[in-house]
Image (cartoon, rainbow over all chains, first blue to last red; front, top):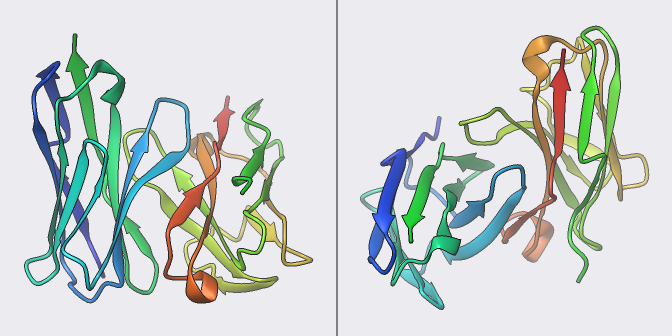
Length: 109
Length: 116
């Protein structure tokens, strides 16, 4: 069964720092990987989708990479802002979607 | 395009009472998922529909949970009777893409259930 792990579970950084969130998965037979943001009491908002044939995707200050063979993905956030404070989850799709438990990010002004 | 709609946003009930949640996925999305998210955890799949048929309900506690998607559009998730451990956020999601399965997944705002 696919297992998705996100490290660290929580992260606190000062405003303006660049940061990296990690996601690892045990089964490389995936069709895609997706990064989400979740604000307290809200649903998940899609940030980036990487198809299995792709190596990375970029949207604004966000860049996500995928190394399917090693079972890893990273989400890079440039020049962090207090508004980036949220929980970030990754999910992989094989025969169904499997989610990590998320990284809770706090950006300190 | 309109997003995934869910209601109610919040519900507080006593244990052993019943509750129902409603979801209307993005128009044209054939696949619909219901997830349960307990605080501090990732979403856990409860049931997957493809049009009005059930694809996977292996993790749905069928003694108390039921779900339907009669016309292949909106869906209802019911809990009866509720237990304390059912306190969670219930999320509805539908994916976009060829065949409606392998594409980007979109979530509703969720329905937060508190069982007292």
